[in-house]
Length: 446
Image (tube, rainbow, N blue to C red):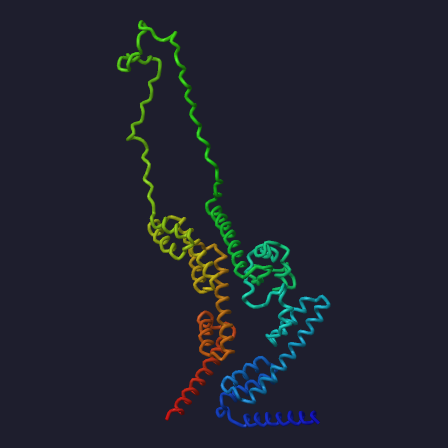
C-alpha cells in the first residue's frame, strides 16, 4: 500500500514538473523571468549530459529565488546523479587498487572528486601519509634543469628515500620521467609544516644562487675566487743577549783611554776602490699613496642588506651607482637585493610585488633563468588564487566579493579559464538582485 502511495506521489510531482516546463516553453524568451532562464539553460545542459554546468544554472536560479520548487527538484536530481557517478568511479578505483594498478586507481579517484568534490573516501585515497589535498598542506616546486624527484626529497625532507611519496602525491606514473619547468606539489610530512618546507626551499635557493653567482663570476672574468690563505707569521727578531758583567779584574784602568764621543771621532775616508753608497730617496720623492675614497651610500646600503632590509638598501645602492656608474659590483648588489626581496615577498604571498622584484633583478642579470621562472610562477599562483576565491564567494552568494576577485584575474590575464563568462554571470545577477532590492525598498515606502 505504501509503495503504491509513493509511486502515485512521484508520478504527481513529475506531472507538475512537466507542466511547469511546458508552461515555460510556451513563453517567449523575453517573457521568461531570470529564474526561468536559468532553469531552461540547466535543462539544456542536463539533456547534453553536462551535469556540472546544469547544476551551476540551477544554483544561480536558487540565488535569485531560493524557494523555487522547480530549481530545487532539478538540483536534487542532478546532485544525486553526480554522486552516483562519483561512487562508481570510486568503486572502480578500489578494484584497480586491489590489482596493483595504482595509476588507473588514482585516475578513478580523481574522477570521483571531479563529480563530487566532498567525496571523503576518494580524498583519503589520494592523500599519502595522511596529507590532505588542501592547499595549506603542500608547496609548489618548479623543477630546474637536471633536478629529479629524489633530489626534491633530499632538499625538503633531507633524505632521498621519500621520493615515492612525492610521486604518489602528484599522481605520477613514472617518477623518473620529469622535465625542467614542471611544477610538483611537495606535501608536508613527517612532522614538517609548510613553513618548514619553505625554509628548506629558501636555504636550497640561497646555496644555488651563491653557486650560480660564483660560476657567473668565473665565466665573465676567467678568474676563480681566490682561496683564503693565512698570512705568514712574522719572523720574530732575535732576543737580545744579556750583557755579561765585566769582572773587576779586567775593568779599565786609569791609563786606558775612554771611548771617544761621536763628535770626537775622525771620519774615515772611503777607499777609492769601494763604490759609493746610493743616496737615500727623500721622503717627498716616494710614491704617493692615493687616499681611499669611501662611498657612504654604498656602505649604508651594505649594512641594510646584511640586515635583510632589501627595500631600504635598493635606493641607496642606486644612489651609489650614480656616483660610480662603472662599478659592476654595485650591479651585483642590486641584483642580489631585488632577488632576495622577491623571495621574501613570494613567501608572504605578495605575488604581484614579488613579480616586480624578480623583473627588476633580471635588469641587472639577464642570465637569471631562475628569475624568469619565479615571474611566471608568481603570475600563475596569483591568478589561480583569486580565480578560486571568486568561485568560493560566488558559491556563498557573495557576488560583490566574487566580482572583485575575478576582476583581479582579468586585469592580469583576460583569457584565463572562464573568468570572462564568470564575471558576466556574476555582474548580471548582481545587477538584478540590486534592482530587486531597490524595487522592494520603494514598495515598502508609505
